[in-house]
Length: 391
Image (cartoon, rainbow, N blue to C red; front, side):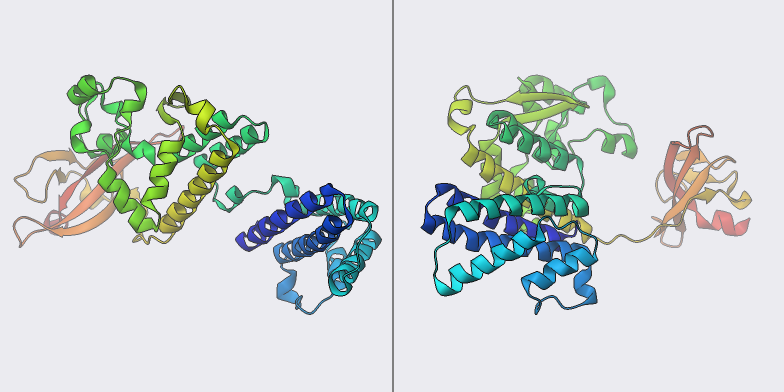
């Protein structure tokens, strides 16, 4: 759904829940207040559906009455459950709000049931979800963290707030804390050789001295210790993304620590007293809001980044065959590769060498497996441009 639609429906959901609470009290005054809110929530949902269907771009909706808005839904083939009862509810709302007349509780309860059925049928038709299945997390773009937040909601609906809070922390971990996990650096025989392997090790935001097998062997006493937060880096990220460092620290304190050592292998760490003190609905709601806000801000920041386009890789032309690829932009540097047939290459940069009169192409070369299409044998290095020109 559009973000504007989701925002409208979330507002309507809050009003609908308040209306339901008032109507459930059962006395005339609460029911009268409830029907005013109920009608407002239904009208907002109708507007949200029409916005999702782009009806507002075709005709103005601001001046239309509630009956006319219902008519717009029908024109879009949206199912309208008991439209006559909905219109009667709107009239009762006018009488109650503008003339101060009390509504009969039995009638209001009937209106509530009709409204709930109408809302769920209409939303199912347009979005595939009922009102109860629409959450603030829907504003987050699809990502692995979002799946953990949905699992957290499911646990919370079953009053299992411990598992819900663990899932919230998993969402934060896969979105951010994994950048501080030094688990893959624990093996002294598996230390990185070359740029590609370095980035494949993870933990790129952790302090550099923690990315060392000896340090890990000495200092990591339990699985959660593999996550080594660089608090200065965390603070910088929060400032860049427009987040409160205090709230992120609260999220980390109020949820169990987690770490994923292998794909799908999770370790959890929390105080013995944590379930009794913090596994609550209030803590869940707070941590969920902070996690969602974090993800939205992070995704917005990353979406605004601009990157220069790169030439698509293509087979190395004959003029490149047999030429040396140097580790650094100087011909006295180590030769990391000699261009051969069967490699694809792309030029990433043009740089001046350590000898200012020389220019180099910084290249990325790789091969492609015929059966799988997988890119293998990656090589980066510098090609002396005059080698090509002289050919």
